[in-house]
Image (cartoon, rainbow, N blue to C red):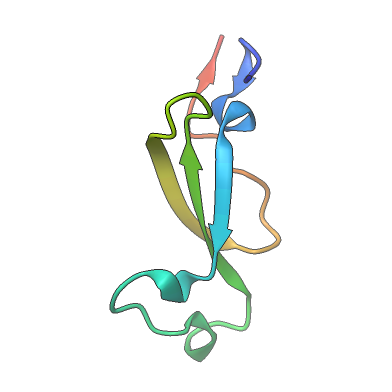
Length: 68
């Protein structure tokens, strides 16, 4: 469960996949030296997709929204 204050994604389930699982997406190594990954976030209770992002493999989980 995510804390009341802070990054909402810290309480979600995350699936990490290579970017090439997306249809019509080529290997990003043709365009950049940095390793890229697809992260899909879903609700742990309902298993509903909340969001997705393509980021560098060494990037931390980006905060889309924080509750204060």
